Structures are given as C-alpha cells and as structure tokens.
Image (cartoon, rainbow, N blue to C red; front, side, top):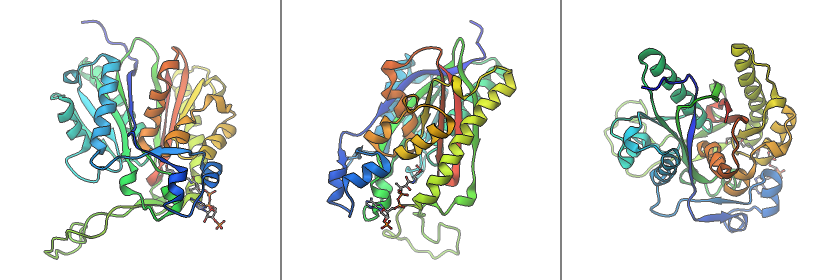
Amino acid sequence: MERLSNAVGYVGFGGYVPPTELSNADLERIVDTDDEWIQRRTGIRTRRILAEGETILDMAVRAARAALADAGVDPAEIDDIRVGVNTWLRFPSLAARLQEALGAPRASAADVSAGCAGFVYAVEQAYHRILVEKARYGRETIALVVGVDGLSHITDWTDRQTCVLLGDGAGAVVLRHVPTGGILATHTHADGRYGDVLWSDCVLSGQANGSPKTFTHETTGPRAYLHMDGKKVFAVAVETMVDDVLRVIGKHRDATGERIGIEDVDYVYPHQANLRILEMVGKRLGVPIEKVYTEGVVRYGNTSTASIPLGYWDNRKTRGAGRLEVDVAFGAGFASGAILRRT
Ligand code: UT7
C-alpha cells in the first residue's frame, strides 16, 4: 500500500440550492420592509426557499452526490459522514438518513449542531478522526462533510427583523489524505452565555422537556422559530470572527514555525450572515474585500451551515493550487471557528 501522507484536505466539492427564489420584492408583500432597506443593511438581493414537499434531506443528498462525483469517490468507500445542521429537529440524524440515501453502508454517521459554525466544527472533527485513524491504525479514512440548513422551516414570517435574512441550501466536501497542503490548523470556540440572543423555541412539550409526566399527546403546540437580537449578534460576530482568523493562523505558526501572517492569506470564506459583517471583518483584518467571499449572502441570504461550502462550490471553476485560504464562521451558542487551509 502506498504510504499515506500526513496531509488531509478537500478532494471534492458539491452544492445545491432549491430553484424557488424569494426576492426582496416578494418580501415586501409579506412584511413591512423594502428592497432598499434590505440591500443597504444586509446586502441580500434574493434567497432560495424549499418548495412544498422538498426536504432538507433532498438538499443534502444533492450536494453530497455532487461532492462525491467531483472527488471520484464511490459512496461505498465513505467511512465517516458528518452533517452540520440546525433545522433537522428530529432523530435519527440527518446523517443517518443521508447514509441510507447515498448507499454508504460502512460509514459512521452523526449530525453536528453548532449554529452557523456547524460546518467548521464538522470539518474539524472529520479532520481529527482522519489523523487519528492514520496515526493509531495506519488506516486511510474518507469523510463526507455536509453543511445544510432549511431555515425557511423555522422562519417567523411575521418578524421582519429575521425573515428577510434567511435562506435554504446545502454544501458538501469530501476529505481524505492529499499529497501536500490541505488543512493546516483549526480552531473552535463557543460562548453559551449568549444563548438567549440567537435561539429557537423548543418543539417538545413539557413532558418531553423534562418536567413531570402529563400523559398527554399534543398534536398541535409550539413549533420552532428562530429569534435573534440582531444588533447584539452583529457586534460579537465581527469581533469573534476577526479573533478566530488570527488565532488559527497563530496556531499553525506556533506549531510549525512557518512565518505566515494575515497578509499571506489569498482568500477568506466567512459565514455569509450579512454583507456589512463581511466588510467589517475584512477591514479589521486588513484583507481587501476582493479576497473575501461575499457573493453568497447577496444571492442566497444567510444559509447558516451551508454558506461556507456553498462558497467553495460557487468558486469551484476559479480555484487555484497552493493558495492559502481561511474559513471562519459564527452563530448560535456563539459557537465559532476557523480553518486554515492550503489548496
Ligand atoms: O448567522 C448567524 C449570525 N447572524 C448574524 O450575524 C446577523 C447579525 N445582525 C444583523 O445582520 C443586523 O443586526 C440586522 C440585519 C438583523 C439588522 O440590522 P441593523 O442595522 O442592526 O438594524 P436594527 O435592528 O437596528 O434596525 C434599524 C431600524 C429599526 O427601526 P427604528 O427603530 O430605527 O425605527 C427597525 O425596526 O430598521 C428597522 N427594521 C427594518 N426596516 C425595514 C428592522 N428590520 C427591518 C426590515 N425592513 N426588514
């Protein structure tokens, strides 16, 4: 068997957004808002929304199949499936459903819930597993990581502060050993103290929620809606994303002695929450906006865990080799994280 390198990286990309578009003009008919406000405050022009009968699993399957085809990997070869998702809200996990749909019988499968940083967390976990399997057992591991969310399922369409922001989509990558480059460092962090600044309701009844049994079966009742204090989230998001980018670069520098700094970064993929956040993060870091992925928020709105891998998918035709790139995400639970990679 060929000796495995110590490098682990992306070898395939996939993405999917539903065909149904919801424009700012459409939203003007739903809530008291206007295209000018939405574009000025968020940069968003349109977003894609799941149609009746279309599911979060459908999006995950399409993105995953595209990534596997791009990587030239058969589903039967996958060892590990991880899905960053916040809107599945049931069990078995979306990853288990995806495993069945793809026909990947030997893969382990689990979801990762870390707000909009779910994809970054899932990549970090898959990366660590691939490294450990190799170091401990000399085994190659192939991982499929998906970021997918159907935020339209938890959108309060009477709340103009949030409904204009959210969209649906999926992105996927295949990870395995690569000859050189790949992931150089990861950093993740959370701050649960901000749990009531960006949150969703619990869909469970009091009974299931841990309070004394009531022996009732409620068929109607509370459903999950996203709630957010946008201003508070905005301020902490900018600060945290800047900090995470600098930390992940510093982590790699300290571990290897490679003299790299933010000026060496060729491209940044931030979570696509708001164009103003992306502009401020770029400015604070001293990275020109041309080197920051921003098209996603304009075209798809905030797709939560899907936004970073959808960015890879969008840019797949212009990707070069040997580029230094950083991914950075921030979301509910104030879970955040960054990945430093060489393409
Ligand atoms: O993905 C997870 C992380 N999420 C984020 O990072 C989102 C972070 N937050 C944001 O992107 C922004 O805070 C928002 C886009 C949500 C809001 O922008 P803002 O500049 O912070 O606006 P604001 O909430 O301070 O509202 C300003 C005004 C208010 O009116 P008054 O009180 O000044 O008269 C709002 O009622 O804009 C009003 N407003 C709207 N007007 C038209 C709020 N939403 C809308 C709307 N259309 N959709």
